[in-house]
Length: 279
Image (tube, rainbow, N blue to C red; front, top):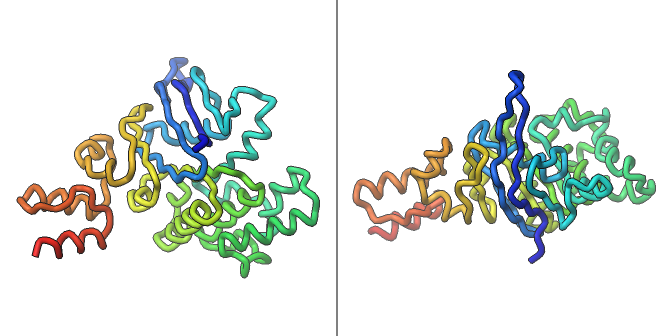
């Protein structure tokens, strides 16, 4: 399967007020396949948001190379194509909403791409329908809930027909209901539309939905694998300043007390099956 995102030995430094440099990314090598759903985890300051900004050339590596569908992000002539291929959704949806009506906001991106009006109309309708916001098409975005605003922001990206969407902690400011709305939308885009999803998050219940997980610490990738393989390494994950899913933690503690449970339990349903097996 072809790669959507590839990084080769990527390093990136931020300048500081004192004039010194802070290393934010240190020799990052990852491959994300077309159509894959990948979650990137890490505590604050781990480098995950900095890495996300490299995936559509908002930042360029100080050393190494980032490829988006084999396009080198350092090639200025490819910048337009790169950002059409990989769209970005940020933590605060208010920062991405630019119009006073939902459908006008969703149309903003295609209009700037020079898409013909009839095609814009079709894209706007399809995108709003995809995120289940059709009944709010004529509403003001600023009167919507946080989860609804974030879905409008996602619709605006979808309308530009990206093959990949990078979401940088899109549920961090939302309540549980809003988080669920956005996560369901993300899963739908991946499973039904075939869009490559890169989700930056610190919520473990979101990460377990991914095909693969990368864990970052101090600018480095320290773990990579399927959710079951990553989260069963409870102590390593905690050493990175992260939690594991609650049922995984429970399984880990019960195993230390002598019960023989699978170490890779991620959901309540899996826990119930394991406990019934012990009878």
